[in-house]
Amino acid sequence: MTTVLESLNSALHTALETDPRVYVLGEDILDPYGGAFKITRGLSTRFPERVLTTPISEAAIMGICNGMALRGLRPVAEVMFGDFVTLMADQLINHAAKFRWMYNDQVRVPLVLRLPMGGRRGYGPTHSQSLEKHLLGAPGLKAVAPNSLGSPADLLLAAIADDDPVLFVEHKLLYTRPLLEEKDLLDWKVSDSGGAYPTFTLRTSNIEASHLTIATYGYNFELAREAARELMYEYEIFSEIVLFSQLSPFELNPLFDSLRRTGRLLTLEEGAATLGWGAEVAARTAEQGPSEVRIRRLGARDLPIANAKSLEDAILPSVQDIIQTARILLEK
Image (cartoon, rainbow, N blue to C red; front, side):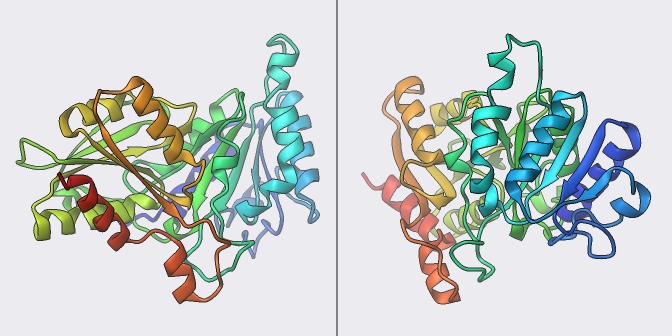
């Protein structure tokens, strides 16, 4: 049974083996340590010339990646904790995202920034955040997030092959999750939009009418599935889940297709809900989607994430939060 971690590690081995332009760099990524979350394990042993350990300077990592990409290489950088992307913001937003446009499409910046995000491990306020929402509005950047339903390896290889800079948002709790198999999805009919960064739609099997659409990404899909199962068995509320691989730029047609059936939208993210991914999805649904859709957003409370598990659990969205919010949406 393949885990998300093993899938991502396999993709990096494949990329380095098949494309001499690919370099991997980051802090403490060399063997035998293999990175803080072991995604780079084995790479430096096989490809010592193209797996580069760096000083503890995220700004330097980003600057080096920009230069390498401009010279025709395809760097893949690991940020030890995604929280530290704030230290890269200037060169990411003002340089990597803009060079293509500033120089009339004469240059491209094909780099991947791997960002381990998310809480629920007791790491505290500066190592547990989901900061991707702060970067989704930067023109020129793409943001994608693996999940346990699709192929994390295929998603990462597509990001490495992309000619634009890609933020690869990996929730830390996903790493040890096994990839879902057909036997894990007996309650669902699954379809996907195709393309490099697919959107998946899950509908309850053998049910004609659904009551609710849950839009989410990454690890939040695990919570959404658990909540949808309880809503079905305990409350006879049938949900559809629209699972995004690409967070930005927005492609919402699969979501709108689901909302034409359900008329109710619940967005779910782990970042703070204020001005978040879900807020933008809700706004675009109100502007461009089917008429008369009822909408609720669910995310973390507007607080720094605590170390203590009881406080962290109270701050981050839970399965029970999803169930409660879904039931509110169904009230007449």
